[in-house]
Length: 462
Image (cartoon, rainbow, N blue to C red):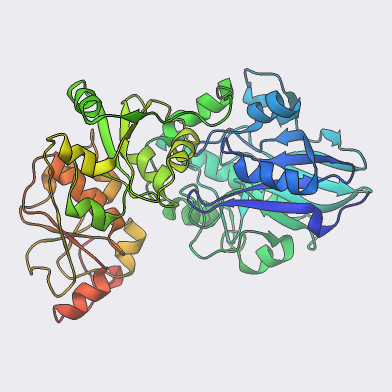
């Protein structure tokens, strides 16, 4: 059976900004590309189509999530397809540039496209010898290319030059060739906000500013200039993916803990993570707890702000899914999950535990005092409150120690309040008092205080 567009099922992780793909091969088998460790959506899609995953391909050694390929090999007998240059320490079919895999009518051709990583492959899908689409991973993505600084600052330019040649190689594919990247909008590996998840070679030749660069030097300047910060956990996962993640037997447990057990965990150096909405955390929380609301971006901030070696206990609110906490943590390699507080904050108070509060204020209630903006650099540059102090949320966590740079009595703000509440919890853990959190963003604050937002071009603080 040949390729049809409805045979390809994109599976988007909105929190990490990534896409995995499940390709129906037409004979009851499927190919999975860049599947993550949280396989719930992929398995549901396979069940709907009555498919068995026969192949699991990884375009590169991922830094932002643990691969699900080893799990698929264990559970379904899938053949893992990956770069031979990646030296993976588990059974797989190692591929080099130009190698082809017969999928049973369709073929997959490996194209060496280094840049995002050294061993990066793109996979060209062939139907009767004709290329119908290419899985580009972290090479060519929608209107950009994935970052090249994950292997250290000393190699950023070298890899950017490799990325230049990789994108040029992909750009000579027929213009009608579909482009199926892994990294997309929301990914700290790359993509500009609001970008589409998939594209074509023709569309990228029209709209991708990196492909429009007149020469290699201009390309490198543009790509390197676009690189912002990225989560701390990225430094660990490539090697874990090379070794192969531990195979899991179902959803790992998150045991119920009594208040006394949580107190003991804190005394032994553990950490409480409060996953309730920001307003619930503000109204009362365990002193020293870190607020990371359970939402799509939960894994990113967990991995950015806390080490994976610290035992974690969670405060979960009514109606929140503890299983979601587990998978968000496990997909980025956080496995030291001690459990969740049984009965939540009411049980904590009943057991005599103290509770702290944080002021959560609207723009008109916020003081005119120091204003701390914890958004990413690009967000801040696009428009911020005049005179605002800017520290990215990721810079407030230990061991960076930038929490000490925040002034007393500060109003903490982001775009809506979730990241600001996380920042406030870090400041409070570091000993700050009188911290308040803005329920809203800079536009609301500026309007309430008679200001006009500044952009970086205005000469405002950076």
